[in-house]
Amino acid sequence: MQIRRFIQCDVFTPTPTLGNALAVVVDGDGLDDVAMHRFAAWTNLAETTFILPPREPEADYRLRIFTPTREMLFAGHPTLGSCAAWLHCGGKPKQEGIVRQECGVGIVEIDSRDSGHLAFLAPPTEIRPVQPDTFEAIVETLQISRQRILYSAELDNGPVWQAFQLDSADSVLALDSSRVRWPEFRALGFIGAHAEGGECDYEVRMLAPSSGMSEDPITGSLNSALAHWLQSRGQLTQPVSVAQGTCIERHGRVSIRPRDDGVMIGGQTHILIEGELHL
Image (cartoon, rainbow, N blue to C red; front, side):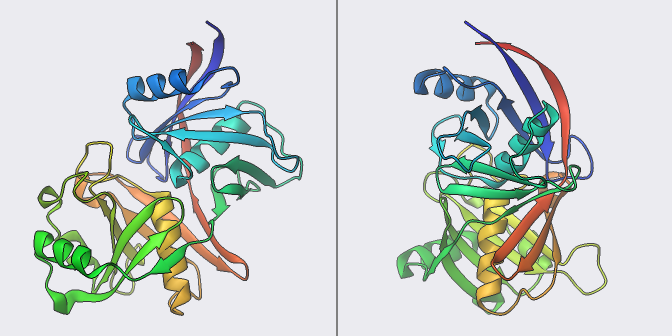
């Protein structure tokens, strides 16, 4: 048993306790797969991460990401939250202003110039059609009017999303999440535009997450995939803001900023618990 630094933080929200919680084992070196799986199941949060020494010479640290049931190649709020925890605990990037995180999808660059609002360069997203049978099952189960569906796609950026752009934020907010359950539907993403002049440009919902909840509070990897999807159709030409978690009384806020080599996904992280872990 070893004493390790431990952080629990709240990610993608301006208001602590209204975002997406994350457990971070800052000193994860020496823990084997079984120990990591067991601890992630014990925390019972959507994700628990372990910061390890990097294997790639350009990386500042290596990150492993676990849900209570499985390991993930990449996830957005664990990326921002783990980087915030690493910096909070004295981590110094090799290049000032850019943290390079090694994880299952490779090296993810994180803009750390504003420590209160980190942003990562979204990993590439493969875009392909939703399988017809899957499309029909989702539309039928959620009773979505076809007239409200503008676009659909299967998006793969490590996680695989069945994504739908609806005609408005109100149509997204009206979806009944109780109609879908994991594992029948694993990761459904919905996005719709708010009326001009509102606080946020888009509303996003992620239904049927594997954590057992009917809806995920705030999902960085989904917003990353959706941003690439919007960009591929010429719909993302300037920075936009996204609200998520509204229907489950969360106040998630994600900033999306396009640039020549992709999109930056940003948000605020709050350190809520700091202490020692005996593991």
